[in-house]
Image 1 (cartoon, helix red, strand yellow):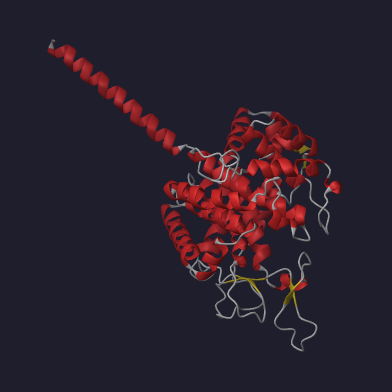
Image 2 (cartoon, rainbow, N blue to C red):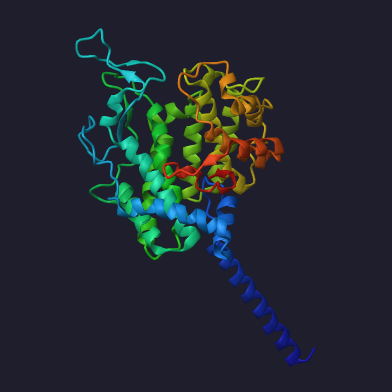
Length: 412
C-alpha cells in the first residue's frame, strides 16, 4: 500500500475517532441527569419550549411567575427555629412528630401520646418541616426552569437556596436527622422522623439541574457532594437510620426512596441497583397482600392517603431505577408480588374515593391519584390508567410545584 494511502487512512481514522470523542463528551455533558423526576416529561417540556410551542411557552410563563416569589424570598435555613433541640445546636434539624399530643392526665403532659391522623398544632412551632417543604418546592421550580429556559437568574437563586440550607458554615444543616419528629418526654430512640428528609432531598435532585450554570461552581458541587456523602453515611449507619430501614410500612419504603435520591445525587448507580434488589423489592414483597392491598396502611385513620403515599414513594424510586434499566412497576419480588397489584387494587377508589371502605377521616386529594395512575400507565403500558389520570386531571396551582412536569394532565 502506498505511503499517501496509508497516511490518508490514518488521518481519516483520527478524524472519525475525534468526532466520536466529541459526540461522546457532548452526550455526557447534555445527558439527562439522574433524578427522581419524570425525565421524559422534563425533556419534552424543554424541547417544546425551545421550539416555541405556544402551549408549552404559556405553561412555562405561568411557573416563571411562580418563581418570582422565590427570587424575592430570603434563602431558608434550619437555624430559623423558635426552639432549640436537646443538643442546643441550631444547625440540627428538629420537628415535632405531628400526631403526638400532651397527655391530659399528666401535669406536665409528658410523655406525649399518639392520636393517629390528628395533627397537633404545636408542629407549627417547629418551622423546619414547612421550611424544608418550601425549600423543595423552590429548588425544583427554579432548577426545572433553568434546565428548560437556560435563564441564569433561576440557577443563581436555586444555588443560594442550596448553599444556605446545606453547606453554609453558619446556617447550613448538620447531616443528620437525630431530632426529626421529636416526641417530648419520650426516651426511646425512634427512626420515623427520617421521612421528613424527603422534602429537602428533592433539593439535592434539583441541584443536578443547575450543574451547567456558572452560578453553581465546582466548589459548590464538591461541598454539596461532601454533605450528601456524610448524610448517606449517617442514614446507613446510625441507630435511627437502621430502625427506619426496617420499618414494615410506608416509612420503610420512603427510607429506601430517600436513600436512592441521595445515591442518585452522588451518581452511585452501583448502590442504586443493590438497594433496589436487596431492599426495595423485598419490602414490596412483604407489604403487598394477595389482593393488592397494603395492610399496614389500611390500619391507619387516613388509609387511602397512606396507601397512596406508598405508591408515591415507589413512583419516585422508579424514576431513578428506570434510568438504570429496572422497572419497579413490573419487577416481582421473590414471592412474585408486584407493586402493580397495589395500583390495580386502588384504581377503582381513585376514580370514586367515596366508595373507599376503610377509614379516611379527611377528604382524599384526588389529584395525587392522577400522577400515580399516569406513571403506572406509562410503566405498565396500561391505557386504562392513562385515561383515568387524564379524567381526574390536575389544576394549575402555584402551590403544588411537584406537578410542574405534568402539563399532559393539566386542566385550566
